[in-house]
Image 1 (cartoon, rainbow, N blue to C red):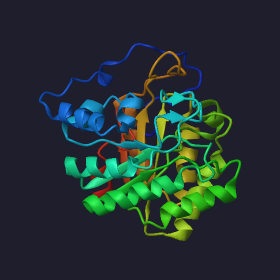
Image 2 (cartoon, rainbow, N blue to C red; image 1 turned 30 degrees about the horizontal axis):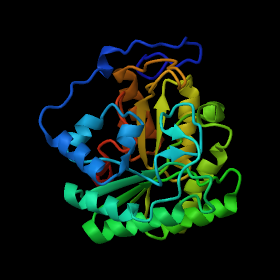
Image 3 (cartoon, one colour; image 1 turned 120 degrees about the vertical axis):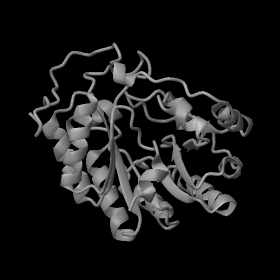
Image 4 (cartoon, rainbow, N blue to C red; image 1 turned 30 degrees about the vertical axis):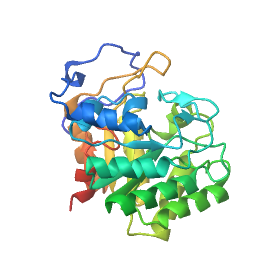
Length: 304
């Protein structure tokens, strides 16, 4: 049992399909969400909001914000939780950084979150393109930057991955985010055979050594079959690596092509896990069924 008597997360629960009441959301009223969606479409950009079928996308669009997904809309990985298209991507679009910057300026963003598909087909994993996007956004907006890149293939080519990470770190983004997603026992089942939990931890340690001023952030999805003990051990690993910003949210199956939900975690359990995370050492924690890694990202980045 958790400290307040809530049940321990279990690996034995059968897959479930029916959404509990706390995961049902109303569509926001007004035209701001249409403005954001149309702007993204007009500039031929991709957002993780759409491609990952985020349950908060209409709320974020209504607030004129979005998480930009660069390097195309086709991923070279086949993670079992993700609905982004898999296959052979096209070469990076050299004009994409300029269009991302234009969108951020027109939306009036003060904090810009940039993520990407995984590009194992590129020698640098897309780091140069990512760097060009950061520079373009800074010139156009002066906004703070949160990067949410791939692991750059660090499990198979650590030297090249470190060089790719360094290219982003040396641009001094205010927040470097990389989602652990799940516990070590489920890592390759959820994220695929090319993923490496040890590299995730080493990447955070490397960033902290290179620039300790950058805030490190990570997130996990719950309800994949993890136990509470495994989850707390994972949080301890991340905290030991210097991660201080944390998001915990419910895994939601985007379609029947992805792995099923093992369990829906109640809001009360999320609250308790958030409190436990703070005791472990995280200074800013967002924990709730609908929390996602870039949800209210500006608020989390600006908290004292």
